[in-house]
Amino acid sequence: MAQKPNPSRAILMITIVIAVILIAVIWPLSFVGKGGGSRNAVSDEADARIQPVAKIELAKAAPAKSDGKPRDGATVYNTVCMACHASGAAGAPKAGDKAAWAPRIASGNAALIKSVINGKNAMPPKGGAADLTDAEIKAAVEHLVGLSK
Image 1: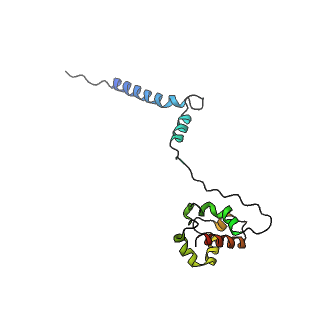
Image 2: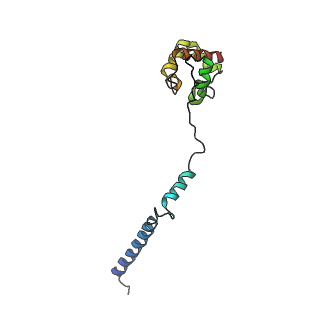
Image 3: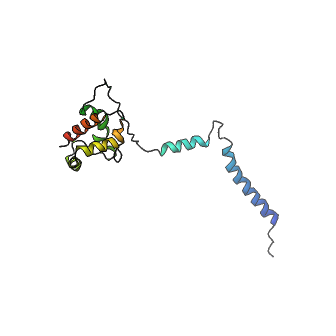
Protein backbone atom coordinates (compact mmCIF):
# COMPACT_ATOMS: atom_id res chain seq x y z
CA MET A 1 0.00 0.00 0.00
CA ALA A 2 1.17 3.50 -0.84
CA GLN A 3 1.75 5.96 1.93
CA LYS A 4 -0.06 9.26 1.99
CA PRO A 5 2.18 12.32 1.72
CA ASN A 6 2.68 13.94 5.10
CA PRO A 7 1.66 17.65 4.83
CA SER A 8 3.59 18.61 7.95
CA ARG A 9 6.79 17.16 6.46
CA ALA A 10 6.29 19.19 3.22
CA ILE A 11 5.73 22.36 5.23
CA LEU A 12 8.87 21.67 7.24
CA MET A 13 10.94 21.21 4.05
CA ILE A 14 9.57 24.42 2.50
CA THR A 15 10.34 26.34 5.71
CA ILE A 16 13.92 25.06 5.74
CA VAL A 17 14.46 26.00 2.06
CA ILE A 18 13.10 29.52 2.64
CA ALA A 19 15.27 29.93 5.76
CA VAL A 20 18.40 28.91 3.83
CA ILE A 21 17.58 31.33 1.00
CA LEU A 22 16.98 34.20 3.44
CA ILE A 23 20.24 33.51 5.25
CA ALA A 24 22.12 33.44 1.95
CA VAL A 25 20.64 36.81 1.00
CA ILE A 26 20.72 38.61 4.36
CA TRP A 27 24.07 37.36 5.74
CA PRO A 28 26.29 39.22 3.20
CA LEU A 29 24.28 42.42 3.75
CA SER A 30 25.22 42.42 7.43
CA PHE A 31 28.87 43.08 6.49
CA VAL A 32 28.20 46.13 4.32
CA GLY A 33 29.82 49.20 5.84
CA LYS A 34 31.76 47.24 8.49
CA GLY A 35 35.02 47.30 6.57
CA GLY A 36 35.16 43.66 5.65
CA GLY A 37 33.96 42.16 2.38
CA SER A 38 31.47 44.88 1.62
CA ARG A 39 29.46 44.76 -1.55
CA ASN A 40 30.60 48.32 -2.34
CA ALA A 41 34.22 47.21 -2.58
CA VAL A 42 33.25 44.42 -4.94
CA SER A 43 31.12 46.83 -6.95
CA ASP A 44 33.97 49.35 -7.11
CA GLU A 45 36.33 46.66 -8.37
CA ALA A 46 33.85 45.63 -11.05
CA ASP A 47 33.34 49.25 -12.09
CA ALA A 48 37.10 49.73 -12.40
CA ARG A 49 37.43 46.67 -14.62
CA ILE A 50 34.81 47.82 -17.12
CA GLN A 51 36.05 51.40 -17.54
CA PRO A 52 37.04 52.46 -21.06
CA VAL A 53 40.68 52.16 -22.03
CA ALA A 54 41.01 55.87 -22.74
CA LYS A 55 39.02 59.06 -22.43
CA ILE A 56 39.23 62.02 -24.76
CA GLU A 57 38.71 65.40 -23.28
CA LEU A 58 38.88 68.58 -25.32
CA ALA A 59 40.46 71.24 -23.19
CA LYS A 60 40.62 74.87 -24.09
CA ALA A 61 44.16 76.06 -24.66
CA ALA A 62 45.40 78.70 -22.28
CA PRO A 63 44.88 82.10 -23.85
CA ALA A 64 47.95 84.08 -24.74
CA LYS A 65 48.65 86.89 -22.34
CA SER A 66 47.32 90.05 -23.83
CA ASP A 67 49.20 93.29 -23.60
CA GLY A 68 46.14 95.17 -24.83
CA LYS A 69 47.19 94.92 -28.47
CA PRO A 70 45.25 92.75 -30.88
CA ARG A 71 46.78 89.32 -31.44
CA ASP A 72 47.83 88.38 -34.95
CA GLY A 73 46.25 85.49 -36.86
CA ALA A 74 49.06 83.03 -36.17
CA THR A 75 48.90 83.70 -32.42
CA VAL A 76 45.12 83.25 -32.31
CA TYR A 77 45.37 80.08 -34.41
CA ASN A 78 48.12 78.62 -32.18
CA THR A 79 46.34 79.41 -28.91
CA VAL A 80 42.69 78.75 -29.82
CA CYS A 81 42.04 77.20 -33.23
CA MET A 82 44.88 74.70 -33.36
CA ALA A 83 43.34 72.53 -30.63
CA CYS A 84 40.82 71.17 -33.14
CA HIS A 85 42.05 72.22 -36.58
CA ALA A 86 45.49 70.63 -36.24
CA SER A 87 44.10 67.16 -35.44
CA GLY A 88 40.63 67.31 -36.98
CA ALA A 89 38.99 66.83 -33.58
CA ALA A 90 35.20 67.01 -33.43
CA GLY A 91 34.99 67.04 -37.23
CA ALA A 92 37.00 70.24 -37.70
CA PRO A 93 38.69 70.46 -41.12
CA LYS A 94 42.44 70.09 -40.69
CA ALA A 95 44.64 73.05 -41.42
CA GLY A 96 46.34 72.53 -44.78
CA ASP A 97 43.74 70.02 -46.08
CA LYS A 98 43.02 71.66 -49.44
CA ALA A 99 40.15 69.32 -50.32
CA ALA A 100 38.33 69.96 -47.04
CA TRP A 101 38.87 73.71 -47.19
CA ALA A 102 38.10 74.30 -50.90
CA PRO A 103 34.30 74.61 -50.50
CA ARG A 104 34.73 76.73 -47.39
CA ILE A 105 37.20 79.05 -49.07
CA ALA A 106 34.83 79.29 -52.05
CA SER A 107 32.10 80.62 -49.74
CA GLY A 108 34.36 83.58 -48.90
CA ASN A 109 36.11 84.91 -45.85
CA ALA A 110 33.02 86.82 -44.71
CA ALA A 111 31.05 83.57 -44.41
CA LEU A 112 33.94 81.89 -42.58
CA ILE A 113 34.25 84.80 -40.15
CA LYS A 114 30.50 84.67 -39.51
CA SER A 115 30.75 80.91 -38.80
CA VAL A 116 33.54 81.50 -36.31
CA ILE A 117 31.71 84.33 -34.54
CA ASN A 118 28.42 82.41 -34.28
CA GLY A 119 29.83 78.90 -33.99
CA LYS A 120 29.18 76.02 -36.36
CA ASN A 121 28.56 72.32 -35.73
CA ALA A 122 30.80 71.31 -32.78
CA MET A 123 32.72 74.62 -32.80
CA PRO A 124 31.42 77.00 -30.13
CA PRO A 125 31.08 80.72 -30.85
CA LYS A 126 34.49 82.36 -31.27
CA GLY A 127 36.07 78.92 -31.09
CA GLY A 128 35.42 78.92 -27.35
CA ALA A 129 37.52 82.04 -26.70
CA ALA A 130 34.93 84.67 -25.87
CA ASP A 131 37.61 87.34 -25.48
CA LEU A 132 38.49 87.36 -29.20
CA THR A 133 37.71 90.54 -31.07
CA ASP A 134 36.29 90.54 -34.57
CA ALA A 135 39.65 91.78 -35.90
CA GLU A 136 41.46 88.87 -34.23
CA ILE A 137 38.94 86.39 -35.64
CA LYS A 138 39.39 87.88 -39.11
CA ALA A 139 43.17 87.57 -38.79
CA ALA A 140 42.88 83.95 -37.61
CA VAL A 141 40.55 83.05 -40.49
CA GLU A 142 42.93 84.63 -42.99
CA HIS A 143 45.83 82.72 -41.43
CA LEU A 144 43.98 79.40 -41.53
CA VAL A 145 42.82 79.97 -45.11
CA GLY A 146 46.40 80.82 -46.05
CA LEU A 147 47.56 77.49 -44.61
CA SER A 148 44.94 75.67 -46.67
CA LYS A 149 45.40 77.25 -50.12
